[in-house]
Image 1 (cartoon, helix red, strand yellow):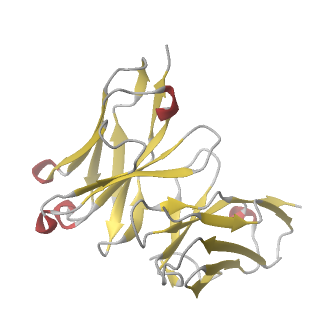
Image 2 (tube, rainbow over the protein chains, first blue to last red):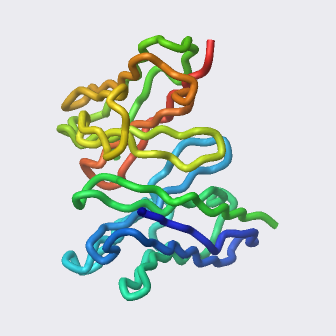
Image 3 (spheres, rainbow over the protein chains, first blue to last red):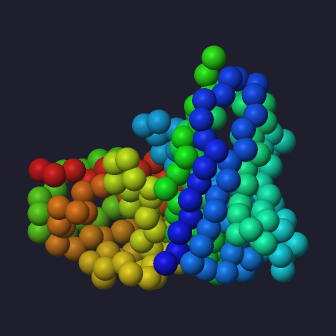
Amino acid sequence: EVQLVESGGGLVQPGGSLRLSCAVSGFTFSDHYMDWVRQAPGRGLEWVGRMRNKVRRHTTEYAASVKGRFTISRDDSKNSLYLQMNSLKTEDTAVYYCVRGKDGSCFDDWGLGTLVTVSS
Amino acid sequence: DIQMTQSPSSLSASVGDIVTITCRASQGISNSLAWFQQKPGKAPKSLIYAASNLQSGVTSKFSGSGSGTDFTLTISSLQPEDFATYYCQQYKSFPFTFGGGTKVEIK
């Protein structure tokens, strides 16, 4: 069974940092592209970024709203994906989802999400 | 960026109804279009990819069609568990973008 479990969310002050983790099981993590998607309270879905697999040299793409502040990384030996978030703003408050990529393009399975609240 | 526009933003329907949701891209995206279902307080669930292909394990009462800029999601014989918010998403080019969502409510 495919599982993606996010952790690391919580309350942080504006300007602060937080690192989210996504632990996966049930599939060969190293083969897959992985994405982060977020959802602000009561709002729609917003794509945050993607990290490709080792074959594609773990290259990344980011949304303009987070580029330069957020960094995606992964440890294939630990079946884990990470999202380092720096210089956090109140508008970064959201549930953050880890998503498995499918066929190098679209999305497949989603994690349960972890809530990040940026507030003073 | 490619803008995705869903309509309607909400609808009321009865159990057994056929429901159609539309999604329009601001430029051509071929068939790089996905649909997701989200229930309150839950993570989204992938339903359809490549405009018309069902994800593994998704019931065939969901169907998708379209290409280029205009797409539809159809739910046949609406059941209580289908009341949710549905999102379309383009993955033709970065940044990936989602439609604003369509909330399907019980009439």
